[in-house]
Length: 210
Image: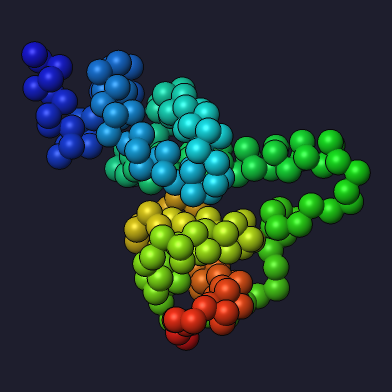
């Protein structure tokens, strides 16, 4: 009963939860997994576009969190800390996957992963494409277009537009400045609009992309 009573306070008192985690409390870690598994899995699934791979990577995220909890800085957000681990693990998994494909293929270039560096600077304004299109069919088109956006921009767009993090939280997750976050999001949204323009140009009920 004592563990249950204590767990009820952890939602409101993250500092107490962090203390329990750092002391090795199994109850605290079970609570952490139960509370954050859904959001972490959702983020990883968006980044990998593969539910089974996302499940494996999500397990790795919490394993890394369990092993690294003593390095967690008191006063930081557990959510952004977990998201930072999740982004790192998802990106590492994608890079391993692309390398594996290259080893198995005679192709000289496998396009669309954005691993070799940032594309030329893009400038974009306006709302997120996710705010403009609500239907399941259109969301599928957006997801396909998102998969083709360079990794560095796609991650920022996912954290901001799909996960709903503030610019400051995205900056903390990615360990970059807020200005860099805003730039990456603008570039990512512009790349999405460019990819979606021909899709909606063919639609009989074309939506504005401006």
